[in-house]
Length: 44
View 1 (cartoon, rainbow, N blue to C red):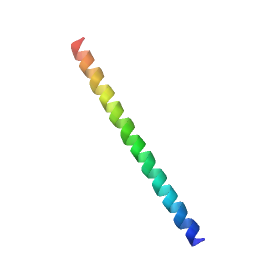
View 2 (cartoon, helix red, strand yellow; view 1 turned 60 degrees about the vertical axis):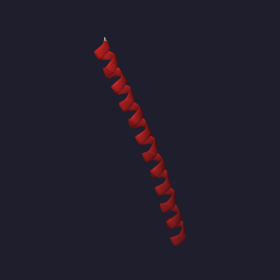
View 3 (cartoon, rainbow, N blue to C red; view 1 turned 45 degrees about the horizontal axis):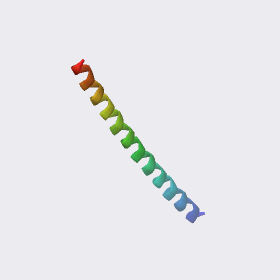
């Protein structure tokens, strides 16, 4: 049972790490999009 809990903790940790990476990538893309839209608005 102890081994199972350790493996479960490891899986959860790696899963959360993947999600965190995806979130940071998404926020970066959103930030870039907002910056580009601001530039377009300034030009227009």
